[in-house]
Image (cartoon, rainbow, N blue to C red; front, side, top):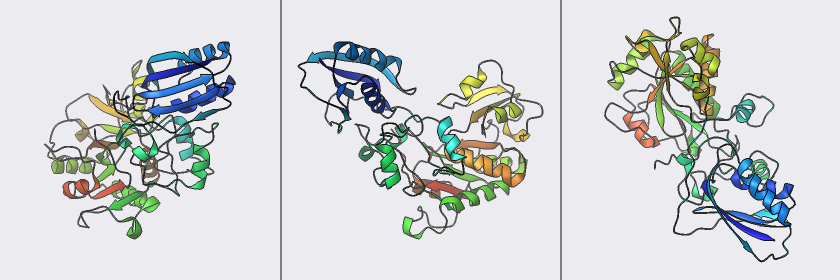
Length: 377
């Protein structure tokens, strides 16, 4: 028999087509799957029992970031197909599927980020089908690389091989990249040109850009950091003078500031973790969670003056993990960063590099940006 399934929900950008292809292969089913503007369309052909098992497992074994809202299925005449393939996406008008949110770097990618033997060691944009930017890189649907802000980054041969390998965690991962094919960091200081450095003439990019940002933070400076969805302002949360300067420059005299930490162990040094708090902090969405402050928290009193709580979030972008680790190495103590919106009072969050270089020049001592554009819905 041959069966057509139209799947709706959060099924693009979450590794759903690779899941479909692997499942069909495991059940020895033929057919195709493809993205369209409404979701994912699947055709499977084979014994009725195998097709029924495919439909059951399609839901029960879905990728962690996927959400299946509806499956419309009907039978069509079999055509004697062999093999299963992910087909080119179909454009079109009509129903539009849901674009998944950006999510925190996963444990597998984080392990590779920290592994000197891995080819993505210290790559600030490491990602896979289970994590990373989605909404902030999606220009149009269907969700394919040409419809994202990665369209201008040609994949190197190694990334192409991973992208095409059904057994690889980056099989059909649209934001795939590495040190060779980008994206890349850059660093600029106020007073320079009010535009991001050109790729061919960057004096400070890549690893050197990261180290200059760390040096600024370690010296009590303020750095505007371009993350996944926009710019944030960061400083050493233990440095009272740095926090005070940030408040003065941002015209934010009293409101509490959120702090960024690397993991739950680091969070436990700043706040008490009541039951359930760890799971919320460590969720893929990485929310800011308001928790009771520890009396010995290694942060300046100016973070939340007169309050007994701190707003804490765990690092969600690879560049956050690199900044925190390198700042700890530079200062010889565990690092905690203030992380607040990259804007002056009353202005919107900066997400364009040109805006950050112009509007944050009076607040930040340095700007750590990158060459992947950010899409704001």
